[in-house]
Image (cartoon, rainbow, N blue to C red; front, side):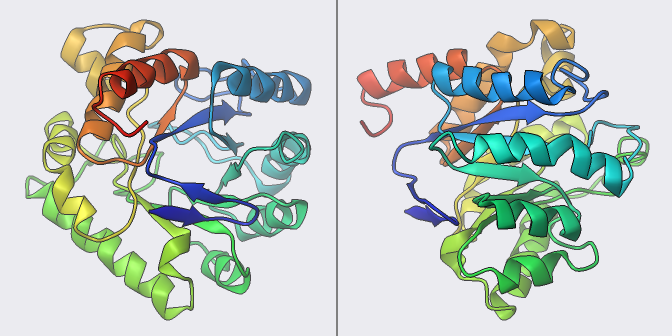
Length: 278
């Protein structure tokens, strides 16, 4: 299986590690650490040195309760970092829901649009459909970041609901002319879901894979892990790596992580043990 993107056809036989670069003052885990462009650029290079296969760069915090930045702020935060990242020789993803930033990023040579709102904002689907080759990741989110954890998904079969919703968005993109080889799906761990629903999405990941598209999983440092082990964000490295490995074991093609070096090392052990392809 391959993921077609603007500049790269990514081989997904080997699980891919996507390094997170939050150019934000208020992200739940590392807000403010890389808010200045120079620090974010250096962080991109550090993650590549640690073994990241892809970089995911965003300027909007989507933590529960977050306030959305205005367009000008998001553009100013992200574009200088993207301009640098596309020179580093790896696939680069822009984490945004805004069509204006998508278009500007793709014009710079960015490879992937990673949208937590699954191209439902005005103009977003049109931007991706008009591009000849960019990759796209569609994520499921119940509600909006400001209130999503105040009113999570109702007590129902979340796996079935998420799979049906992602299947419809996949059909919408295919109808707009976006090739299936360009599309990856993300069930949105923690985005308007209870801890029990998040665990069900991992336990029944095969039902999401039945949609026929690669899966991207983002468990890194999430509150569901903190609830399980009783540790704050800064102490969730081990559980984050364990969750990433569990996702890969159950068929995820890409893991989106903060702790690149530890995740890469863990995958090397699994590869040496013959648990994943060499």
